[in-house]
Amino acid sequence: MGIENMFMDVLPEVLTTRVDDLINWARKSSLWPATFGLACCAIEMMAVTSARFDIARFGAEVFRASPRQADLMIVSGRVSRKMAPVLRRVYDQMPEPKWVIAMGACATAGGIFDTYAIVQGVHQVVPVDIFVPGCPPRPETLIYAIMKLQQKIQTEHLSMRRDTVPIKEQLWETEEHPPLLYIP
Image (cartoon, rainbow, N blue to C red; front, side):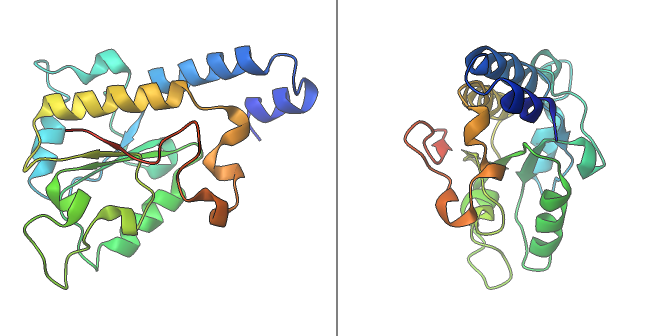
């Protein structure tokens, strides 16, 4: 029961656009990623926090060790079948609203590991908002993905949140929001 629900109950149609803009601005300006580095892409994810790339200018420099304090999960690296339930549990423990970036060829499509032990795309485990290709992708690519996620967050409406839509209708795509942003 956040502030957006209180505003939507009291003033459903009067201040909706301004409240949307204000809350989305606050959300996009303070993304707190959860630490979920699984393989070599995690080194590039850690490099983003250095002074050279300075992810702090996006409000996302504080990587949270607790999923209950994070709203962005950056899955960097290959996900094994044994790790998939852990990944889902961490995702489920994150508070709403939450977003996911799949970083690297292994997280997006399984990479070179076309075996039974590796999940062929993390989108089979959690809903992914942004896919970042590369093996490993450069830190600049992750910064671009965060900027694209911020644009997506800015255009969201409080009435169309993923957590309020039934799972069968969810399918991660609507008219206004394309399902997946794939960064070339």
